[in-house]
Amino acid sequence: MAMTEDQVLALRAMLGNDFDQHEYLSGKLDRFNGWGDYPALVAAAFFEAAHRRFGESYEKGDIVQFVAAARARFDPTGDQLDPVVAENLILSALKDEPLDGLNEGTVAQLQVVLLGALIADENLDDAGLDEFMADARELADEWVASE
Image 1 (cartoon, one colour):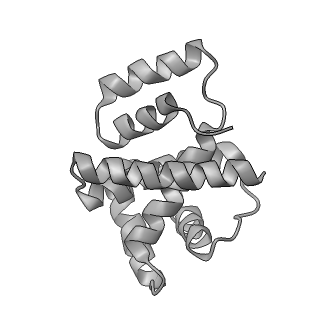
Image 2 (cartoon, rainbow, N blue to C red):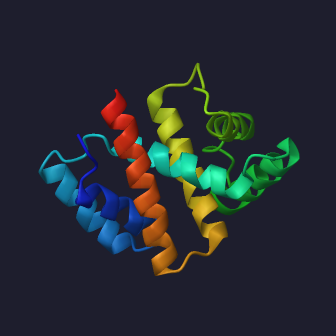
């Protein structure tokens, strides 16, 4: 099944800091049991954002610095973002390898937080965010079709 427009718009709204629209679309997805393959969209967006940020020639120190900055901005208590797990999650995306030993909920939560930080750092305008979401949707659709 392909990503739905509401799924894409909900994630776009969240990444664009349009939280009222995100709440509205999330409610709509809740009412119509429309979440479906949404986790694949989040994972694809995370994968895409990590590759855009770090590329092929990344340094582990760059990832460590990014995670530290993300924790400072989005997890001031230090309760939600384990730095080692976050770093390993980014590395797994860059290496295109699964990260074993974590439950899906933990991975999804980390992906959302790190994705928000990755996109915030890009300072995308509306057109850039639309392009990013189109790329993420295409990748998610490919992943879901190959399952």
